[in-house]
Each structure stands twice: as C-alpha cells, then as structure tokens.
Amino acid sequence: MTERADEDLMLAYQGGDARAFEILYQRHRGTLYRFFLRGMSRRDLADELFQDTWSRVVTARDRYRPDAKFTTWLLQIANNLLIDHYRRQRPEDTGESAEEAFRTTPTEVRDEPDRVLSDFEQARQMQRALAELPLDQRQAFLLRAEQELGVEEIAEVMGVGRETAKSRLRYALEKLRARLR
Image 1 (cartoon, one colour):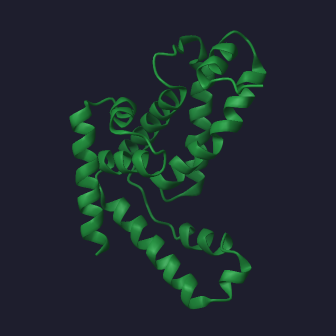
Image 2: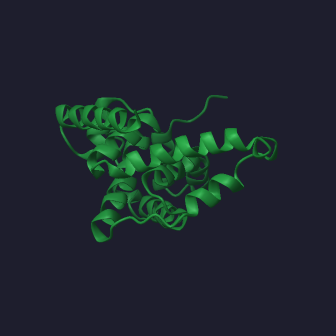
Image 3: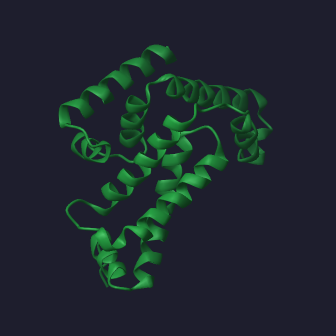
C-alpha cells in the first residue's frame, strides 16, 4: 500500500475525513513542534503556538488549495504565528532551557560532567547566537537547518522573493559563524 500524499490527505480532510487529519497530525507534529522550540526559548509559548497552528489548519481547511506542498502551507501558518508573537512581545530567557537540557540528557551522559557541560555550552552558545539574529534571518536559518527547505520553499513560507530569502539565509550564516568563532 502506498502512502497518501499530504496534499491528498488535506483535501480528504476538507471533504470531512477526520482520519486524514489524524494522519497529517501524526506525520508533522514533531517537525512543527521542533520548529517552534528552535524559534523561541520558552516551551510554554512553543506549546501554545503549536496548538494555535493546528487550530488554524482546522479553521482554514475549507480554504486550503494544493498550490504548494502541504508542509510549506503548514510552515507558513506557523511562521506567521511566530512573527506575530515576536511583534507582540520581546522574547525572554527564563532559564527553562538549562533545566530542560539537564532533564532530557540521558543518565549515562550526566555521569560525564565535562562532556555535558561542553555539549550544554555549545547548545547555549548556538541558542544565544540565534536569539541575536534579526527575526527574518533566524527564521530563514531555522527553515533551512531544521526543516531542510530549499531557498525557493523558504521564500514561499516567508512570503518573500527568492533573492531576499537567499540573502537572509546568507546573512544569518555569516553572523552565526562570526558569533560562534
């Protein structure tokens, strides 16, 4: 049995097939959640935006058109919610990331404090470097690094031209390299 394409599943959901939505949710929940976790420092906000994105998918199902890949459409919704969030308030670092890093570190690794500290410090430096990027550059970088989107898809998700997406990605990479040296 061949796997149904995301676009076909969304059209089936549009036609009333609730199981099609469940399949889409199962396929893309991890990817979408990681997108939000990388885009912000607070898990509770990532949870909220994750839920808001799926609510928007449900609400917009009648307007869905398979003009682009489903994942591009989904990430456009997510990206817009993230941008709206940052426009409303400045992100803050509450220290939750350090607690979460320790909680999710396997026990056998915790027994090697130098390694844990090194891994944690590298992750923390990357998080700080990402937080210092302008939002548009951070989003372009995360769409490339986390979602493995190409420049054309990044442009589509962000609602900009190909060259703009390309330059945002290039500037993000340059700034990250300089910051992490």
